[in-house]
Image 1 (cartoon, rainbow, N blue to C red):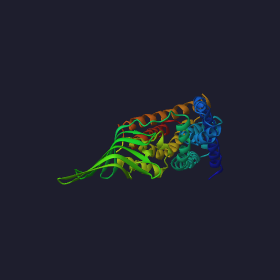
Image 2: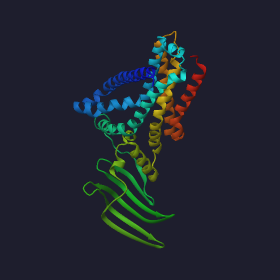
Image 3: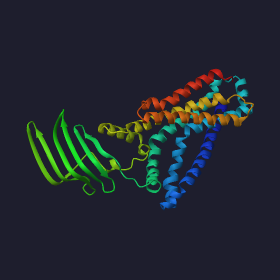
Length: 358
């Protein structure tokens, strides 16, 4: 690497850190203003507000807005270099525009790799603490409201609950069916089931077991039966932003579990999984666009170029949120939804490169 590369790379990373710091501080102040009443109403301890919530809130937001902040930092730095005619001097010395991009892309690649590991392994662990705090001190008390719940808990076993009380960990009008091929082999019906925390098992009350063997049927009643099921009280607890608390391996396992049960809501977790893959690429794409659109000295000044950068950055965010919303409704493949904004802006980058004079 040449001295010029180190110069641009250093300025690029410094500008990025400065932009992230400023924006995150603004977000923290806005968030505190919005939630201070909840903190007081629910008697949240000051230590927990700082250590459990904001200490984990800051890295979450810093990572979440990282692609946009890289773009803003790129536009801000490059437009300042262009305003001081440094870009003209660099290009006049025989350095090609592609070569000029090298330190930017290198810096963006470093941030992209860091973002990938943060979003898949570090941030989810911090989110566990942050979201637990939100559930306890910010959100309203959670009550499971599902009705007529059907679950596939094993390859040939299906469970049904008419309703579930998450405060007492009790399910009502419970049935458990074992099917082989197209034939029902056994059906357990119970008035209710209750989680036994000491035994880590379900207690089934006032039950009847109907066993079918060809033309022969056997009915076995009982008062209480302790049993182990591929079902836990956590399956009925609050799933508020649950996808944000999973590391990459945990997210994959949860997706497999939902699919095996035939449960709804798999799209939300698939979107989270695939969006984590797209974020590093978004950083690189937006960095290149930022250099292309701000390398030319503007008569309107640096402020105009930075404002335009903010506009394009939030246009990207709007595209992403729109595609994500369509995918969550089941009308768009999750893979297509999360990659579509990157594909569109990559095309914009190619168009800008071929049309904007440098």
